[in-house]
Length: 396
Ligand code: EPZ
Image 1 (tube, rainbow, N blue to C red):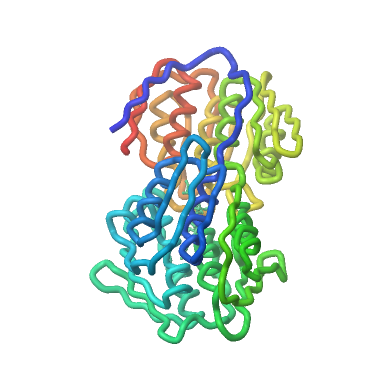
Image 2: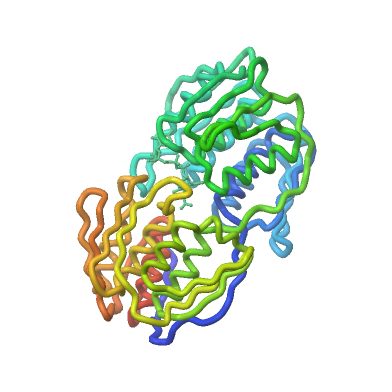
């Protein structure tokens, strides 16, 4: 268990920071390397825990993975045929391991994956992924904690509509459809998160034929082969919002670089409504929060709505914004794990089903806190930065 001792500051944060590459773009892009016979080079890689786990997963499947943390580059080469089993030891620590299913199915017509198991955010089924594969002609069964999927005759183009927007569901179905035979595949009600568009952009540069025919509808014409390329991934909008929120929490001033402000349209609107001064350029955002801020009402929704991953971060910020704020979490059922810890720091938060009511306070106090997932941890760290002396224990 890792432990952080955090001494809050009365001084506002000041300075500028370059934002890393997006974790949630890097993971599907790495999984898509399974589709290639040539080498794929990914640049601007954030070497966070999940990215290392994905490296281990690709190596377990038989890819050769070369990394340069200094240059933020990963090179993935597939000299031999992949193994077709996604092991429990890896998928149980990183749900995104499911992203290997689509490319394995597309290239080898079958795969076997451990079920990913429970998650701090609540139930995270993959029924949309599996039903989508089924529409492309695959069959699957579940046995002893493993999902066996096969399409003996290969995947065939078809139409599939997501009952609800799913980010990795969309990426998985896109990758499964790259080599389909017969009529094109049409995917409806897809996720248009910037990370998904980054994957589409990468695959199209490699020779795929994926194009939008509606706001949330794409058509994919199957191709025979992709050519290995080098691709620089987009900046991480959740990391960018985390840094901006640090300045808001401490009533400071910050500039975040290497991020497309368009990816944070909803978030910046909320910060402006709170009273923050915001200046944007092509790839930077400058924020000044050095004044009295106002409470807000926010609900999370798929992009371009307010991101659910940014919700725990905003929750922490609003604990020190005088007045009554309301947040409605509409994506996951159990995403307020930081609330009881923030209350330990002296915050006033009440949760009723998916709605949080926050009564902002002038001061927060120090306390010992414990955390679980990535975003919950940063929410608590933000609360600690806004309070006196805190100890945050992080279960790794
Ligand atoms: C992605 O998870 C992100 N992970 C999550 O970020 C993010 O919170 C989430 O999208 C929503 O934006 C990665 O990109 C690796 P979903 P994903 O499928 O794809 C339900 C982080 O901290 N659903 O869009 O797993 C599901 O239960 C992580 O970086 C089904 O019911 O989320 C949820 O309520 C946490 N059946 C909703 O849809 C399915 O088959 C959206 O989930 C799939 C999803």
